[in-house]
Image 1 (cartoon, one colour):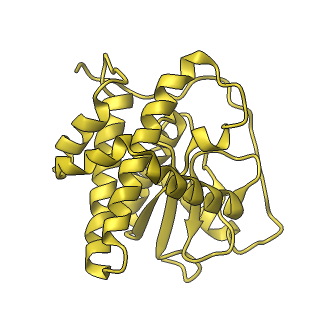
Image 2: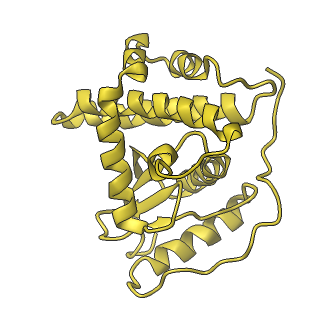
Image 3: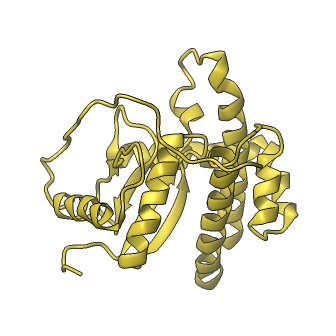
Length: 219
């Protein structure tokens, strides 16, 4: 590992975004070769678009995403101030997102009904955390985390935002339409690692020509 590579990252994400799910799957590949601590944080697309007119087809996914992020923030609050509990928490949050993504994006016949509850069960978590899903008092913390992500990488970006170590800036992406193999995954990682120390570097972009490629299995 090069000396400039990070030892931890913070991953701000919205669980309703299929592009974010592909980036998570890419990150899994990277972590097999560059073990790091990952902190899982909320980035609400509902919060980012609260002053915009949302097409009806997106509203169910955004509503269920808001319920999920409330659960995440409630779990984070319970572990606040306890380093050991916080370490366990990050593992639990990764498992929760993993199970939710498998259900939402990789399982045929997915419905917006019940996936959060099923994800909590599959992740082996106490179902009591679900009480937060319908408690709007957690929305302020979701909004605060979202604003933090925008301060790092905004404006005009979406999910996810990734921060290396305690850098003063982060980045949106990398945007991919399929999960690369191990070699190409590491090439992307090394590009990002190398660019993070260049404060005046902002963007390289190639337009997307299709939907994200995600394999599905029967439910």
